[in-house]
View 1 (cartoon, rainbow over the protein chains, first blue to last red):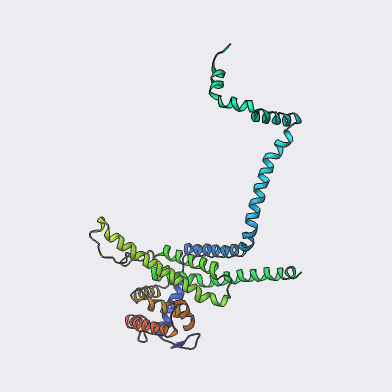
View 2 (cartoon, each protein chain N blue to C red; view 1 turned 30 degrees about the vertical axis):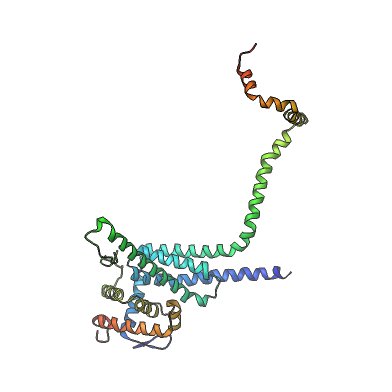
Length: 122
Length: 196
């Protein structure tokens, strides 16, 4: 008989079966050890991620908004700088043409103007 | 400001927690794998179970005191083992209903008659054979007795920790364990008994 950590007596079966179990643990193959190693690292990475997540919850959306704003600026800032004063004036003229009352009538006869455009009229 | 002075201490505490968890997992992972392997008889399933138990421990209880980890980890492990065995039973029942399985209509555990995938590369053949006989005897025990024996004897949990891991009273643990030892002694007396 031997004794356990909590002081209770151990039978021969308990002692010898524990020794055989420990030996089987010590003789685990390399593939299994490697897989257990990977599993441990995955669990530790999970813990790290959980620690970062409270801050990530705040900064995540803000970073997303900032990135979207940056992309919009990057797309439209060069266009704005490329526009000349003439382009700006043309834009206003286009707006006037479209908004003019006589041109509303023109829009109602779009089919006629499309035919006029395609017809070979001298 | 208070948070500035506390920041290094908080970072150090987090690092300590990570290292403590790493040490804990390193300490238990191989025994946990062998316990799961004995219960489910499949290398891959046992690895999945241990990996899942590790992840769950880190995810749910990583911030808890390291003294609480051992019973919690083995509780998760036992739950995963039970889930795995339950899934197999359900799968076996479903397969029994399929037309192709006319010859095998019994809804039994498909792993019941399957030999172990690979023999353990132990150096001592006698110990290896004795261990294989122990594994067979353990599988024939009722699940709760098997759990109690492996947690108490193999993992070395005390009665209170085993009760926490098995979610039952300490009295139940003592009863399951005592019955398990009694049955195993009767079956393995020629290998590991007092008379061997």
